[in-house]
Amino acid sequence: MPEPTSRALKIALVGTHGISKTTVAYELAGLLKRRGRTVELLTEIARECPFPLNDRATREAYQWIIARQVQLEIEKSPRADVLVCDRSVLDNFAYYVRRYGETGTEADALAAYCRSWMGTYDLLIRLPVSSALVADGFRSIDVQFQHEIDRLCDHLFESAFDRTTRPVYIRGALSAADIADVASSMITTAAAV
Image 1 (cartoon, helix red, strand yellow):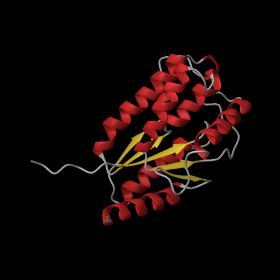
Image 2 (cartoon, one colour):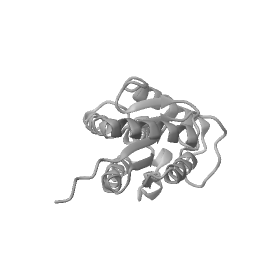
Image 3 (cartoon, helix red, strand yellow):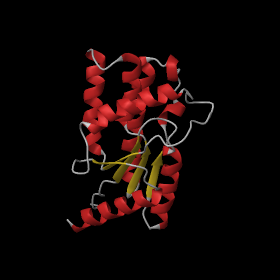
Image 4 (cartoon, one colour):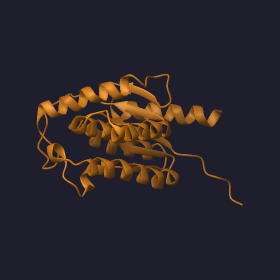
């Protein structure tokens, strides 16, 4: 019988839209590959969503995005040493909260599911708002909308995660190389245990 494979180190780049998460995710995946790691990259799920988004988003859109994120993380994790995710389920939930609120049966259930799933990540990197939004034909370029999501991410992440939690949460303008160094250190530490 073959040896069971170890679980991939799962990294999520988190925060509001328009903060270069996707760019950093691609750079990080490339760096880790050049360091000899097998890497799977999970790009932002919202771009595949068949339902309206931004200010016209439906409850079903957010449920679809979160469910699809989990499904793809499950599928991709066994294929690599590292899974780099452009978002986590919790920052996807921030968009739901902005549109529909954080109270009520559905919000409570979705929040509980997302919080439970957060335990599957090893490293959360919260990138800051650092430059002007650029129109990409997909995400809203409303700066107020962007900052509302950023504040909701503060609320959802800052109260639950820090450098001592699992997942480890680091907030700052980290480069892909900085993140690769943290990830490599975590892999080395895990291998030594």
